[in-house]
Length: 393
Ligand code: SF4
Ligand code: SF4
Picture (cartoon, rainbow, N blue to C red):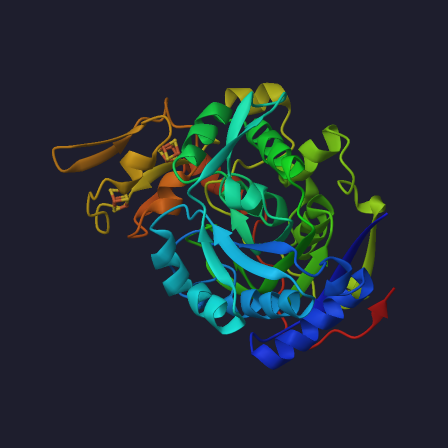
């Protein structure tokens, strides 16, 4: 059985957060169960882009700081690193507060720039992985729980994609094309290349809607931890109210026979799930909507049931960031107008994720709008800040 621990946490205040993290890790043996004195321990937060902590785009710096302190108290040497999707590492570290977190905790920031080539035999023959990531003695994965336009949700497994350096990420998107399954398979292979020692999810304030970069913060008041990121994601998905069949990483992990992909393989510790208020995160508007239609009908209606990106003329400043990042070069800017070639678009939503002006919208057919509404992809219950009672072991 895979152990996953969940703890109620409604604040990023350092003292209560420290208490919550200690309680969270206690059923797993505490931080010292994972760290040996002298270990070089890499903390891998989500550092997607240069946004303030309250935007919920990046892992909150208070979590990074307290985890770094706990690792140091166990004798580890702490490094904090990532390869941001947009913007320079130093700018993202400054704006997200992670630079200060490193300074306060005595950790060293490491930009993922130098890569090591790893041979593979699955989706890739070889892949360039950040050396600082691959050569660390231990990885502590610190994802933010967010919805994700392409993969429905980003949490522990998806956060490890940051080990692929900068622009090379776009190349892997292109290779996967429109196949969410192939991309999920790649992400799982990256996880298997170098398994994290521990995963701690920041779901105190999570993100719903058009994540991972343009969604809305949502109070979930939870921390989730476990050794197996697949199992952690299964529980995170459940706590976000996302139907399991909409999580391609979990379904692909199941096909690959990976441990932790099935709910029945997971043993929960900490706050009892049945006492946690149910929430259904609002799903991204560009997501493929699955209605259980017969395949012939789904095929016939494919074009009408597919959302594509479209620049909002009022807010788009034609800066070209999306065009330059688009893996299949589906975006052109001509005569002061931006257009997307739907036939080329692989619907990776990198353009929306990377647009610094939040100008990329979703274009949906009328039929898709109706189906999206019918799918009930909306929050059914507001987040509660009251502490759930009951502890399960
Ligand atoms: S990145 Fe945003 S603002 Fe820049 S061209 Fe693309 S849609 Fe317009
Ligand atoms: S237009 Fe946007 S969603 Fe389509 S392939 Fe390019 S970056 Fe991805």
